Length: 435
Ligand code: PGA
Ligand code: ZN
Image (cartoon, rainbow, N blue to C red):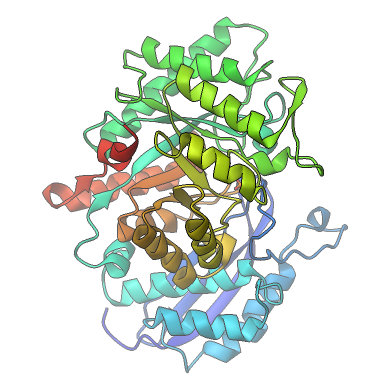
């Protein structure tokens, strides 16, 4: 579908995400007839330094979580400003224009949810006009690497009703030869964990926000032990260099106190920053943990220095709330030598161009990028294509239940099939430096 890529029409609406919360969907049509759609996700354990998600704050509607103001901003401010004049195929110029139109440093005027919806919908429309899948359009002919999935199995923190303070216990199928094998292996582990939880009786399990189990559990080490045992029950080697390794998202910013101490209800005590880092290091000695996200809080940079010295050579240390997909924060972190990986969530920063800049910066500075979903998701699959487009090597989307998660995993299965012999799986090599 060749033809003009000038934006002809932009239309936003309020739709619902996987928690039933309102979110922004944007449709874009180009002069040549091509169309693109994007839906913006939403976090629960949001970082303080994220771009602002505009919500109505009207308690009479969706408990204040409506996004009608963000939708109106797209339809009455952005649409007239870009229609007839802006080229969807020039993403950097479009995104720069949207930032200027907003005029704030954290996108609080129009809202990062409004801006990202337009930014991503334009990319989809431009890819359609070029008659290319999004990953090829954004990444060119070299975009052939399928990411290693890091899959949530047990949830705590803000994503589960009861139990653990720490947020994610993940399976990383480092021994898989292909992406589809990787997915099948973690499904085996997920089922085995379900069998263990059922046998434990009082550990009734429910489905948490990202599709993993959210059981009430007395302590964090139980979750690690269950994941370890389940992996072996499923017939895999649970080892740093085996078939399946363990990842954690501590999401420590969620349980840090005003005085900088970390209160773990499950352990029934508070930890200093150094004690928490030491506890994580101890777990790394006991279990095959290869990746830890937000092991300490977003503003505890001294603690992060210690954590990185302690574990940075043997484990991937991901900054999520720490960096908030912000190139400036990542550059500061790289200068300070803290963490060695960055979680990449487009809605933390608010445009596709800045998201790609963060990935590029990470790759330049030797930080591993991990493309990530939010806990509030939709059927939108943009991040699956983004992972392949950037060759990021890793993706974190939640568990292998709930269709807002499977939409991404299944999209990657289709891309795997499409690439065929021309594709490759990131595989164990991603973690080579830690093994
Ligand atoms: P969030 O969780 O989307 O609720 O922030 C995801 C994560 O912390 O990685
Ligand atoms: Zn996180």
